[in-house]
Image (cartoon, rainbow, N blue to C red; front, side):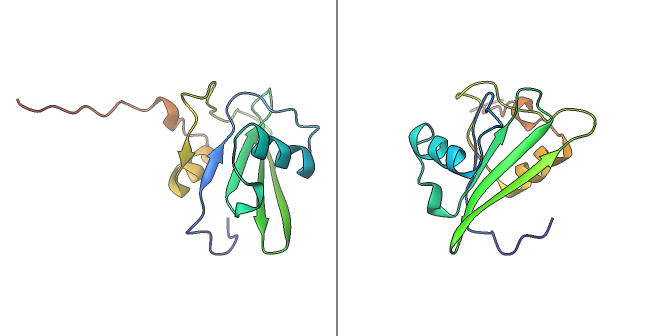
Length: 115
């Protein structure tokens, strides 16, 4: 995937199900009203359908919105079910998401103060 220099952007996941009849305007409204993010920030906003076999990524580039769409022929995308699981993800995690790696349910980090 080569999309240019996106090293300084945030990647935000909308948890749960998104109605995929929505296009640019509807997704931009979700970004602004529900996610409380400015859709023209240049960040990536990632949405998933009910069957978890399609993703849409909305972002603003210079002078207009871009909408990127991926459909899996088999399998499902790992996806957060609720707001507690959703968060900003890294570029590496975004790559894992596209490859089907479920990092939302990875082993928890343990912090011990003594042995």
